[in-house]
Amino acid sequence: MTDEASLREANDRFYRALENLDLLTMDDLWTHDGWVFCVHPGWDILVGWEAVRHSFEQIFANTSWIRVTATAVRIEVFGDIALVSCAENITAKAEEDVGLAVAQATNIFRRTPAGWKIMHHHASPAPVQVTHPFSGTVQ
Amino acid sequence: MTDEASLREANDRFYRALENLDLLTMDDLWTHDGWVFCVHPGWDILVGWEAVRHSFEQIFANTSWIRVTATAVRIEVFGDIALVSCAENITAKAEEDVGLAVAQATNIFRRTPAGWKIMHHHASPAPVQVTHPFSGTVQ
Image 1 (tube, rainbow over the protein chains, first blue to last red):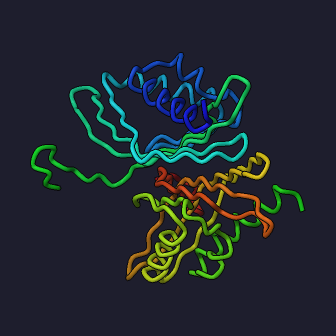
Image 2: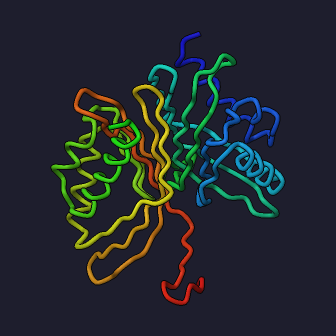
């Protein structure tokens, strides 16, 4: 499998783990270093795998249903470091509210003997353009 | 000069160029590739040096005064790629308003024959904690 295909698969696995509220897959997807870096949209920076893992625990505990579709996926490989950027198209339900959001993500992967692992995730709120699915009109 | 010192200097130069509304230094600081990536806080993604340069032209044209102090600077070097993350503490004046903001930045540099160059800048709004300078009380 090419690096690009492996990275696309790892990036997809990350979003499937989010959708499935699946902490064990998160464990497998990330490097567990003390300098692992994560910014969730609107959150303060988290440093170190322990803090990042805890944030996913919190998000999963407060989310009943979430769907994330990655679009505009761009992959650049520089030796053992790879940069994946994408738009995260998010629909989520917390308590009784269903929310729609778009975030822009920078995901940085590191090549390890066990495959590409995430070492840096930076997601930030992006402008949302709402297009009605059938009429094609834009709000 | 160590990689870390060179990167700290290049990162500082980026924020001084912002403060000085200095497009020529931006030209020198960035790689000029078609896949250069930039997200300003709350903006949509920009791809390619031409689009990124144009965004700085727009920002500089609409800013009369800006001060940016980088704090919590973290530098990680992986061969010819380096990851610098920091908090951007921003005070800016546009028209008659003075605004305070904090953004979280991921800056990715690439080693070139001409030194470390920025290839990716992702800045996103971060929570602001206001501390009164003299009393130390927090708003």
